[in-house]
Image 1: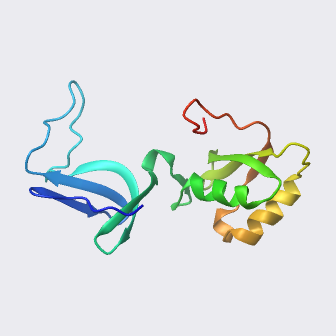
Image 2: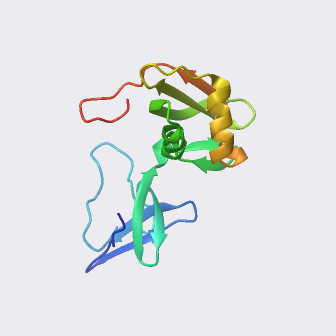
Length: 154
């Protein structure tokens, strides 16, 4: 869903790394006993990673969720979306694992559909067919993917 952010006295901009920042004439001072969340020129870092289409934006993730592989920013949701394209996959959860060379690498847990038996080779072949080389998971695990009461992966 694309939306427009702004209004009277409100400015919005997207940094080069795709993160939304907002500045308003009327704003809070900050959080009690915490460093100011505002830059020196008054911009608030929302930590939302966005896509833009003209003057509209769509939130696609959070900077805390981004996997940084050698400087390339990858959203776990993209890896999970591709995993779910496989007919034998019921649920998937991706995250960044620590890597001494690239900083992080992509790891994914796949929960097969009942009665399905998947192998790492099956999944790696699937990822190679649907993702560019820099987005291939380093590790594929099989197991239950925990889902919370709000149907969000834990």
